[in-house]
Image (cartoon, rainbow, N blue to C red; front, top):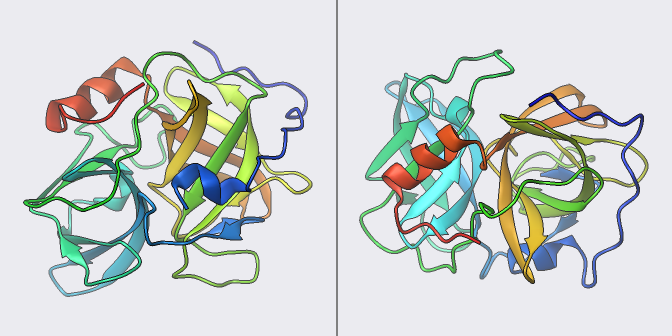
Length: 239
């Protein structure tokens, strides 16, 4: 299915209570959110030499987190999540989509983290009942860099769907719309369905800079993505 690209994204309706309400509680043009109950987590990765990198992720089952494949490169040896309070929790296993390829726009950029104990947060459901719609309001969230360069804080912001493809969704930066930045990879793009905010996409890439350009998200409705996620996380919430 080709991408649907209007000349500019339609304006979205402001959310009651702000974008943080969508995640139960670093995004450019976003608001800092309360972390005591949010299902969006900080993902820290280490290689054999101890070097550290960070992404974001979403709790989708009591013992599972959804993130991006490019956060789980072949040299990663340890992955842990931070809920915003308490100690970091080490993943017992982690899996990147097996055919993921860097810099390939058709590659499926999803990964899952598994844990040997409950994470203690209400999981976010996957949106598997329908496709995203061009122009509909979306919320993006993550632990990445904000417009003032701050990190290590959970933020959420509002945007609108600008493109829908078989493997990727798109949003476009403009005006006061939110935009992902470094460290937000693996975080969720949330859409409203049946009164619930659900994960429609996984933050994958930015074409441009953090304050201009297009954001891309792995489409969880892609049959291969859905099969991959549910193969490792059969108890994932879904709507």
